[in-house]
Amino acid sequence: MGKRDFERLHHVAFFDAMATELPDEYEPQEVNHLTLVYFAVGGLSLLRELDRINKDEIAKWVLSFQVHPEANDDIGVGLFYGFCGSRSTQFPLPNVKFQILKLIVSNIKACSVSGSLPMIVSHLASTYSALAILKIIGYDLASIDCKALLLSLKKLQQPDGSFMPTHIGAETDLRFVYCAAAICSMLDDWTGMDKLKAKEYILSCQSYDGGFGMVPGSESHGGGTFCAVAALHLMGFIQVDLASNLRDSTSIDICMLLKWCLQVELVLNHVSAISPLVPSHVIL
Image (tube, rainbow, N blue to C red):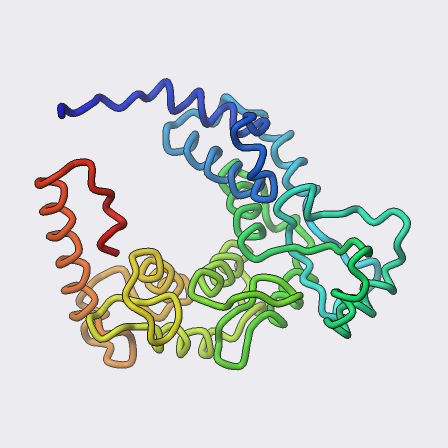
């Protein structure tokens, strides 16, 4: 099976289409619309083709997904004032008073009883995608009213340092610790999280072999390892140069991590040599 050349123009055309509207095949993924656009805009940026999109229109579209409190007193009611992932999760609520949402959030059981009431649900991953898109296209993030976003973000952090992705509850793992760290880093404001608690949670996810599982006690995973290392770097707990990290005994086990990464690389190369048809994720 011979190597194929990188079809650059085909990639550009695909990303260009995804950055404007979802192709028919992707309509079932509407709930992740904002994240898909992040991949498209990020891809165009890597290919040096950002001039193909209308950056002002993209910024306006992204900003329309942010959830805002109706008043300052609403910031502490438990809602996360981040970005919704799509129109179907945004629910403008033209005829439902905000007081009803306060009641629902204060008593989560009411959500199942009041299933007919729509609910605004912003998400950590969608918020990360939104801010990343804005940063890629050169939008000034300092112009965003981030007070409510950061205050409500901190309420998503759990006692063990992990993060829930939404205010209505969901799984907690390294993906959302990374999203929280990236959000604070992009906004240049760390009031949205307790970095020391987050660090302790990340360290608890390092497995015996040096990699990181998504949650404490789980097997090492490529995505979890990226989220762990990237979050620690963004928070300032590990440095870019290897020597500094090796001298810091309070951080992660760098030697074991490097060993795990090299072993994974060797196995991947071995699998690729045997059969190019074997997907690389099978060994992660």
